[in-house]
Image 1 (tube, helix red, strand yellow):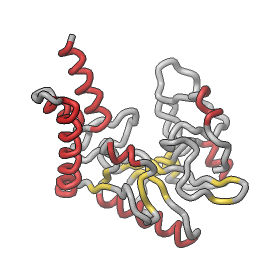
Image 2: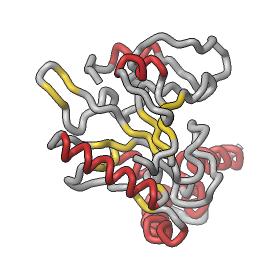
Image 3: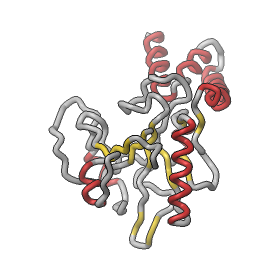
Image 4: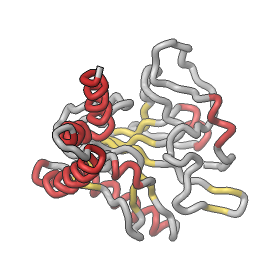
Length: 232
C-alpha cells in the first residue's frame, strides 16, 4: 500500500512539476522526509534554472517591474515558466510594445513549459511540450479603466468569457465549462516570429480581429476564452 501511495506521489509531482517526483524519491531515503523533500525540491529547481539555458530553455520573469512577468509565483514554483529563447524574446518584445503604446500595461504569462526534455507532457495541455508555447492572460478593465496585473481568477485560467460554440458535448474532453465556478469571478471586460495564436472563434468575432495566425484549437482541447495561447 505504501509503495502504491509513493508511486502516485512521484507520478503526480512529475506531471505537475517535472522534477518533483525526483525530490520525493530523494526524501524517501531520509528520516525527515518533509524537510528533505522541500530542501531537495528547492535545490533541484535552482539547478534547473541554472542548467536549462545550456539545454535550450530560459526562465521567464517571475518577479520584477518589467512589462512581462508570470501571472503567479505558483507557475514558477511548479517550474512551468520556461521557454525557448526565441519565444522568450518575442514575448518580451510584445510586452514592451504594448507598454509603449499603453503605458503601465503588464503582460502576464500563465503556463509556458518545463525546463527540460522536448516531448515531455505538460498536463492538462495538449501542446506546451517543446518550450515553444506560452499562455497569456487577458488584459482586464473595470468601469474605471485598465486593471494592471490583475486577472479574474487567481491563476488566470477558468474565468471564461462566455459565447456561442459549435462544439458538441462530449463526456471525455478537456473542454471544461466549469459552470459552477463562473459566478465566483468578477465581471470585467476583457509579430512575425509567432506561428499561431489560439483563441475561441466567438472572441475573434466580438473583438473584430482577423489574422491568418488566429486559429481555433479544436473541440477536444481546453477552452481558449480565458487565456490566449501563443506559439512560434
